[in-house]
Image (cartoon, rainbow, N blue to C red):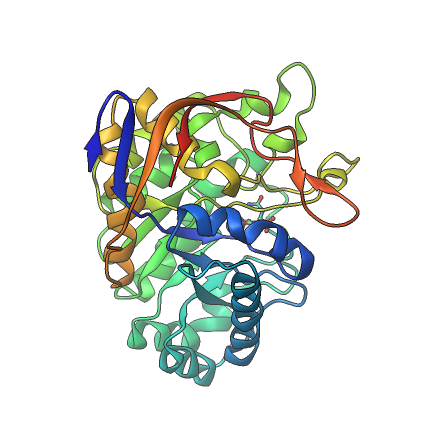
Length: 352
Ligand SMILES: NC(=O)N[C@@H](CC(=O)O)C(=O)O
Ligand SMILES: [Zn+2]
Ligand SMILES: [Zn+2]
């Protein structure tokens, strides 16, 4: 990694948690990720969800067709399957043998966008499937929030650790688990201190903002995602984790595009669009912490190490040049897309 006062050059990063959507939305957003990242773990929460190897293969082909149309040849989508109450041992075996399915994704039913088909009782319904995943070395990616309506929205991740994560990892100690988009001190400390194969992704918004951002002078729907932004003490713990050099923490933007009108609504969708300027956002967060030198490990080394994949060979460069985030970018024929922190100015700009 090379850091000067004018630029940063680092090994080309990967995005270990990304929503690419489908159809015209996919065609609108995929270039933003392909410009900065070499690979991405592509989330399966489409409608209907991607639950089988056949569906993942078809989705991958649709992504590759768009990449080819747009002359984006150096980007590899790594596919995931959506875990349901009915995922079988055979599904796990087929996924492991496919080579292109890299993980299963756990959405507790009702926890987030398109999670209605999610799991209702993980150990009760999925034990044989989890056993097979453990045996094949197939990672389980976890949206770690309980959905119990009695639990306060801001406590859902911390409660998930006690109610789901601990029993899961006690039952399957060799299962590779990624605690996705962690948002709390409890999440960060759990992953730091736990035994066995565990990692966590951290988004740019959870490194840059606390929950005040959602209510700054009025309701700000473009800062609303799940798990929701938390208090400042949690943001500080996440920055500490991401910049610590600990290989368990790696980059996952959770870039989750929703049309402008779907976010600016009486019941707005959860998700921030950060693919446009992901590396600029992360560089800003790392620089604010005085830890720019730790960016390459987080963005480019720790993820491949966890997934057992080679580190990329090319590099990217960011220049110290002010970048004003556009108010909106084109999305579908009916609607534009509002990027995270639209209208704000970042000190870094992605060059190539
Ligand atoms: N993060 C979000 O707020 N939304 C994601 C789903 C998810 O990752 O939970 C989406 O697909 O829109
Ligand atoms: Zn999620
Ligand atoms: Zn997500």
